[in-house]
Amino acid sequence: MTIVSNNPTWWPIIDESRFSSYFSVAAFAVVTYDWALTLGQEVELVWGQRWSLMTIIYLGVRYLGILDAALAMLDNVPTILLPDTVSFIVYSVWNWTSVVVFAMLKVIIIIRLHAMYQRSRKTLIFLVVTLLAVSIPDGVATIMTTMYTSMEELILSSTYQCSTDYGEDVLLLFSIAWILSAVWEVLAMCLAVWIAVKHFRELRRHSSGRIIGDCFTVLMKTHVLYFASFVVVSCLELIANFAPTAAPYSLKFQIFNGLLQVFEVVQMFVLGPRLILSVREYHAKLVADRDAMTGMTSIAFEEHVHISTGSSI
Image (cartoon, rainbow, N blue to C red; front, side, top):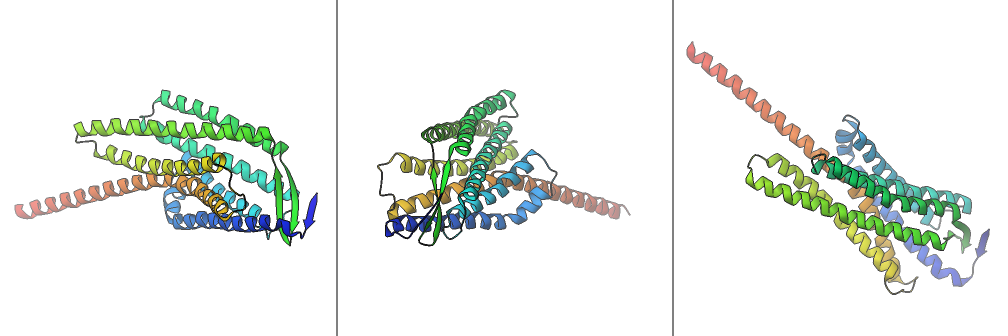
């Protein structure tokens, strides 16, 4: 059903939708700019290397992220006409894209922790089991959203919007899934910090572990940055969900929601791919330094042989 109205009582909703769309466009611009900024690294470190599971995950997070931001922008810009059926399809694809990317990001964290724990099978099993426990409620909530969410097309003063109606059970499931996901992220960060502190203490006793120490430093820097962004997004979501209700169409409320939208995109689709790029960049630098050292040793050896031969003559 389509509602058409030019009633001035809708103007606050129109203004809120238009203001929110600015942040959707900004979020898409951030993701696209970061992709262009790292395209050279991507070609060298991803497309130019042997394909692996991490390659597939990187490409999934990167390009599903661009798709996710584009769909959010398409759904939020009030000057774009989307019938309720098309809007529902866009919303469903956007929702499932977010779920898949969240799962991929957690797989990246698991692989990094598995490497940091020296490929411990017990650690891998523990992380996979907990990830499944976290992902099941999220998947169930997304399925219920796809099945029971209804949308209504609104044409208000020549702007186009869709009103979304969720069931109470869906919102409850999403809250449970969000809490479990936050607990899993905190658990993963604690495991990373614990093993890093343990390794750095051991490296102080042995001077030959510089390369391992540098690798752990790279892993921890990117992991801490990713976790810090997760904390910021989680705090903003907590404030939005549990703080005293503000006027829904006030400027402060709109800015807050817009910033939350941008930070979510940065956490998932900017810092997420960099979890892989940073490690591959470090490995490529390590290989280049090793090849340079080998070349210098070879040149020195050849010069030594030449000098020794000349003196004997």
